Image (cartoon, rainbow, N blue to C red; front, side, top):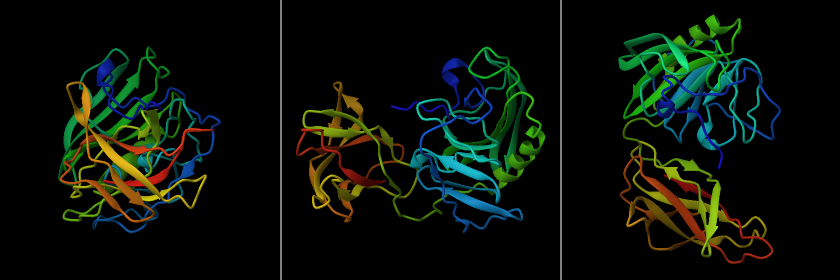
Length: 309
């Protein structure tokens, strides 16, 4: 499973977001260019010439310069990295440093030096009326980053979530000061992707994690902070047999009980119709979706489907 380094690295004492060590893009496999949404979900003033990118999976939306680029590998990473030059994300490797980065995080940055970074700035502030911390750090070269790698940005409250909006620059990057200014403007355009009171559930296409006992399981997933209280599946199809559009699904839910997940009753879902697997699901619930396979030879059956949560 691909390891993501978009979280505050509290486990190793690093006070800012741990992104990639290298400053330049690397050659990679196919990537998907994000489609930016031009209509703002909320009435927020946009700088002239900017456009808006919406991440429904993480429930945030942000503006960025209209001639910049955004790329991701997974649907959940839409809008997470934005840069003035075209860039690629290496498969099964570190993420490149980019000029504008947006991601949900679990903790505020450290306000003091750490084993890997010096804290140059740590300031409590507000942005558009929301509590935030403004930070800047420089790598000392002992961790993944080159010595002198800098990060500047904000960790800001958005509803129940904590979002980091920051820039990351390699040593000697001459555009760092300009990128700081972009971050200062972009953070003021940050809004929730789903307005309060909106009840639509967000679709994702999950990755496969493992096969066991006649069932295939997705990677671990987490419900977003939203008004949606169900987990459903739709657009069910076997790509090797397009006529086969039905499959039996169930959920495995955390926390563990006696060392095991809690499973829902199996439900048959067919075609594009949205079939509910569970109701009254809270925000930030961790779960897997599993489906029963019809064959394992010559290969284990792989079924395409969307999850709505």
